[in-house]
Amino acid sequence: MPRLLLLLLLFLSPIWGMASDSTEVWLLVPDQKQRLRLAIAQYEELSNHTWHTFPNKLLIRPGDSNRYVPQLRANLLLSGDLSIPDNAEDSLHYTRTLASAVVHFQTRHALKADSIIGPRTVAALNVPPAQRLRQLQHSLERWDNFSQNISQPYIIINIPDYSLRLIEHNTVLLQSRTIVGKPDLPTIVNRTDLHTIVFNPFWYIPRSIASKEILPIIKRNPAYLASRDMEVFRPTALGGWQKVDPWKIDWSGVTEDNFNYRIVQVTGEHNELGKMKFLFRTRVSQYLHDTKDKHLFELDKRAFSHGCIRLQNPEELAHYLLQERSGLSDNRVERVLETDKDEQFIRLKKPVPILIVYMTAWVDQHSGLQFREDIYGYDKLEQVVLGQ
Image (tube, rainbow, N blue to C red):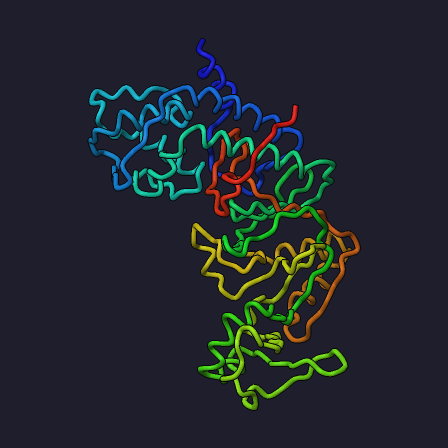
């Protein structure tokens, strides 16, 4: 039996690339490491085979006939998405069996699973096995470095997957879509502890955002501050901050370079942090938080924050942490979650490990090999030396 086929048979059992669900076992130790090593062996072998690429503007729908269908079929057989040969009488016909294989491929790459060969699917198909191999090698090294002696429960945020999962007893208890930092303001990888929840938080706007993004708006319309529940403070001689009336400031003379004010957005419906934020030990000003812009979670690509991580379902995480890690009763938890006025800090009695990782490849609980876009370009920059 050819070595590549043997590897595929071993690796693709029981199911290749099924969609994830709420009970999945994700990135467990040491199983993830073993599965990544097997995937690396598979892609080392794949690198020796012909991998076809396709025109960027190619469009194929189920039922179409197209001269690129045979090359598509060959790629999907190599990748394992097509588990058995598609013996169509017309080799150019895009059959239902082949369309099903494309759905598996799309699911594994976080693409819209519609079986249509369009621009984004073509872009993923055009990534050669050698590049996928580098992704796997990077992910193995990163996971090996971050997962040593990790205890459960723990929270894992995978930046390229735009996801948060809470793992306990080798099971995903909670999961949430996330929004992460833009490529020029990336979310920082970290292994640390989540220790505090802040309800109805004030947003102490970083100087870089205030001077670059808010100042130009204020110059045109100082009323913008009040409309967004923002207050302005200036430094005092004693080292503190004093609230000032923004209408009494000559904003025309204030520039990005000489900006010497603090802008604070107080609790309210306009607050960019939403109803809560979660603090963890870090050397940079990043944290998890709610957001008022829930519609953004419907987007596939969600790298547009200033580095912090926005959560789609922060209430679920807060409920678990308050009840399981601080011992609050259901009634007390509900009272805390319903409070909507004063800023309130609650420090967890038992901090929770949190891993913020950057993995563009991993093996899911169905032995499905998942790939994600290298949104920060880290896979291109790093030189990986695999452990023995």
